[in-house]
Amino acid sequence: MRILCLLLIWQTTITALGKTIAVGLGGDFATLEAAESSIIAGDTVLLLDGVFSDGTQFLTQLNGTVNAPIVIRAQSSHGAIFQGGTEAIHLVNCSFIELNGLVIQQQTGNGINIDDGGDYTTPTHHISIVNCIFQNMSGSGNNDLLKLSGLDDFLIKNCAFINGSPGGSGIDMVGCHQGIIEDNFFDQAGTSGIQAKGGTRFIRIQRNTFKDIAQRAINLGGSTGLQFFRPPLPDPITDAFEAADLEVFSNVFIRSWSPLAFVGCVRVQVVNNTFYQPENWVLRILQETTEPGFLPCGDNQFQNNIVLLSHDITEVNIGPDTDATSFTFTNNLWYNQSDDNWSPLLPVLDSNQVIGNPMFLDAANADFSIPNSSPAVLAGKKFPNPTHDFAQHSFYDPPSIGAYEGHESITASEYLVQDNHIIIGPNPTENTIVIDGDFKHADIQVLDHNYMLVDDLSLSATPVTIDLNGLPNGLYFIRIKSSLHAAMEVVRVIKMGQ
Image (tube, rainbow, N blue to C red):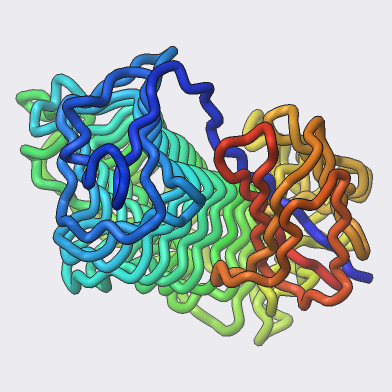
């Protein structure tokens, strides 16, 4: 039986309130910097297809409004390529801006840098980065694909972070707050896939894939110079932390040296994730910032997670100056493929622990969904969040353990709806998937996990039926451009089989 499991990735679609400014060869301006003085709230900056290799594009104090954001988007999805230079784009003290459909590659510094200009009392805020590809960094040190410092109220969605600098991160956050990082793909993104430190707080990281990260797929905290914390640390320092109140929900971790590191963080929830074959540790509990006034790493939760090991490793690495016994472990499923009599060694009791094979449908092709017969089904503990799994299905009550809900009453019935215009389903399906909506025609492309074209159904009349029989199992993307959408809508697809 062939099954297609869909993860719907929406992107913000904003009705243009101002003018459209074309940037690029043959446009109104050659570069973003040249266009900056002409951009006002509500404008759309259309980046014409082509390669932009003009060095760092600095945009300073460029501000939209809540009702009239500034949209900077590619003419066609991934057609505007920022290549080389120290950085592609650097936003300083900006607000209400959306970056959409860009490719950022081969920079020697950071791919995109967004910061508050060093004034920690006025953060950059309300920035959305959607449907962008960050790849193939040319830096070799602490260079990040996406660097965020002093950014509040942000969204990073449906982006790919691939082949980052060996000393950097896919996304590096210093003193960032109220952000959502969801539905992204991280593959060899650097030392870390995501790093959150320097007073970072209230970040939700959900439904992402982390694959083959060199060290820590997610670094929950870290080590930051005291002068860089946002907000600034009090004098004297009391109750300080590198990161707090983070949520890690419904993600998939594939290998990596250590998928998780809790480093000087507090009140972090790691719930309903799937960890597949971590290489050296499942998680680390560390305290790298030890100055007086900093709370020890503790009061964190690890719940409803699946951990599958290929061999014996140290499950939890605990460093000095931490409070590992204040962690909560509950309702996790553990399985060691090399030893049927194995059980994990943890710092505290894992209440309602399950030891058993989760029965992934096709792990070799990155399909970590589970059948109704999996021991993970109905074995989780009900929490207010997350409400939805990796495939955006609702969790049953009680939920399954892991990133995927396996209860057949949920997974067999739900359709996915995007922007009230596009309907995709049924989900899952054995052989075909139907795309429909209140539009007449759509350009539809099926891409593999390397964004290579697999099938082109351009100018197809809706409803469109995609035959899955000829596709091998694995991760795919579907690009959809309809008469009602100026920009591409992207659906992430996992072809499943059993």
